[in-house]
Length: 368
Image: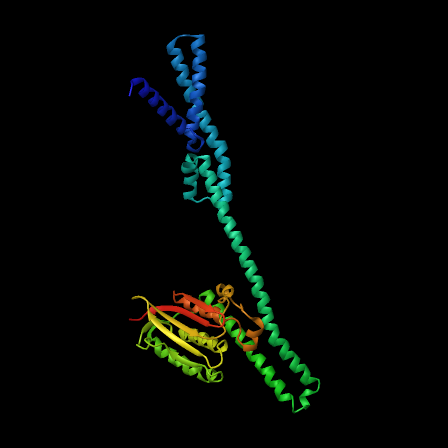
């Protein structure tokens, strides 16, 4: 390569480096002040050189002009422009500056480029947008929750009101209906009590008031206890309980036994409610690793459509509202189950298909 070509490439590279150094995204107040001072000094030096060719005077003019313009411009930037930027940061944080923030404002902020400040503001705006979106979702959830709660409360209350008014209007003297009406009123009052108990339970779980008392126990024994507890209810539909073959060997878990019992009762009870006549409910237990055990409760009932699966653990969410109320329940069972499992630091999931059945699976800590 000839020296001429090498010089051309070197000159181009140096010019490119100089230009890239002064590109807008790389400019700090010091660089911008230096660049501006350099231009002003060059102009004034050129003027001085034309007026007086004394190199000492020219050099002195260059140095004095550069220093004065540099510090003056830097002072202007830091005390006017960055004062406005500081107001932006104060608006973002909306708090009285701590010592750490004061250090940031005095030492770090002046070194930031306008683009870096812009990125900080965009990041803040993005966070605020996410917060607003979350608030909107929570507001929609709150409205839906209050609407569902109101509906769940009104149904038994209006039923009890109707039966009592009918009895007071004369049906109390009719032996053919008075006991029937009182029994129906009692059923609705019991339903109302269950709803209040479940609301109280889920409130305690969400607020963290309910403690988890872990103990080591055999999960198969607890499952069999739950099967025995619900056997009479299962017999009314001819549903048979069983533990899956190969899952009979005792597996120990470390968890709150009574809370896990509540989880299993809810899941097995649902398998009865939504199971088909003469169907089966099967429990499966698997050791996933040294730390977790997977428990699954499966049925061959009506199943759940795919679009409902992401919401089945929400409070009062029903895939078929009319049928669910006929079957019974408060609409809070699966929400309570989810909170109990998560309070153990574990997870719960569902697999389901209409007319084939559903499988609820949750994990617990291993006790081995």
